[in-house]
Image 1 (cartoon, rainbow, N blue to C red):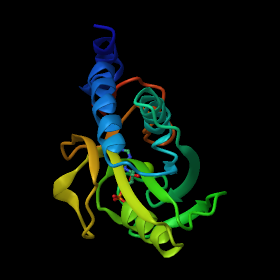
Image 2 (image 1 turned 45 degrees about the vertical axis):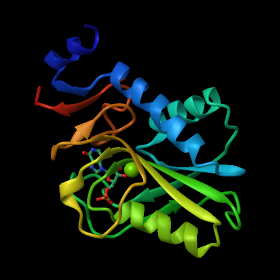
Image 3 (image 1 turned 180 degrees about the vertical axis):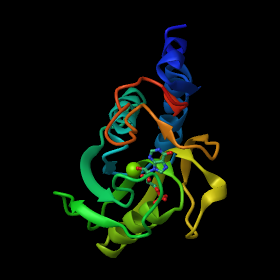
Image 4 (image 1 turned 180 degrees about the horizontal axis):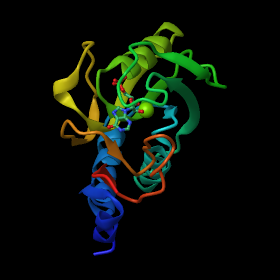
Length: 182
Ligand code: IMP
Ligand code: MG
């Protein structure tokens, strides 16, 4: 298996590219079922850029035509543990007032990032806010926030690949994995 070849380079596969693709089609159908008019997808960068890119194409396949914008937030910086503070590094271009917004993020961990994004977009007058994460680390919440949709429940390990990094590495991997050391 092509994915397995990467085990020896120090990343062990947790979710394969095929598993991810199958879940994205299911999530796209779940989004479509919510019948959100004039949907605006907000991808929380940087970690969600691959997930969001695949998700919007899955949304297209189920007949949706969302607008897309990007919000760059930071809480992790270079370390693997959350600093507890969330900062806007780059704000949205679009006005979310009256819009049905789908927030897309990579990992829901302490919950601070998603709670911040949700509060920000609600406070700006969005008509509705739906949240969708690739990975939900359910047991690690520091603030009370839930994802409306998630692709996978994730074990309590630091994951990389499929857009996610440690110190800017591994984003290019087509699967989600765990660094095992090189
Ligand atoms: P939270 O604010 O603690 O929920 O953290 C969420 C953010 O931290 C996510 O948007 C990710 O960018 C990052 N993050 C959390 N866990 C991981 C991980 O295992 N690998 C890579 N990034 C992570
Ligand atoms: Mg993120």
